[in-house]
Length: 116
Image (cartoon, rainbow, N blue to C red; front, side, top):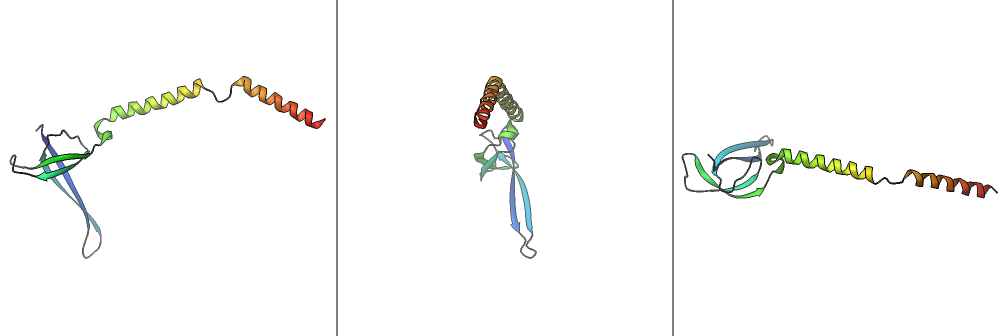
């Protein structure tokens, strides 16, 4: 079953009498030549019977689900971004200690000059 995918078709509609939103799901097996992964959104088309239960073919992948396909890669990428931000903040301080002292001293001088 390397080239078989189980596709879930979801449908939401309002009940004609009670006006409640009803969600219905249908699962069909489809022939997969494109290599889709779990969580991908695909377009399927009806075809000739390929096997006992396979009567659909995946025509195209509309949207890939990156989180479901590679969860470890996303976690590693997020950790790398955090580490890079932390190292950049540690390497480039906004104001150095010496500059902070100089600004405090110059502010004191201007206060003294203003009092005279």
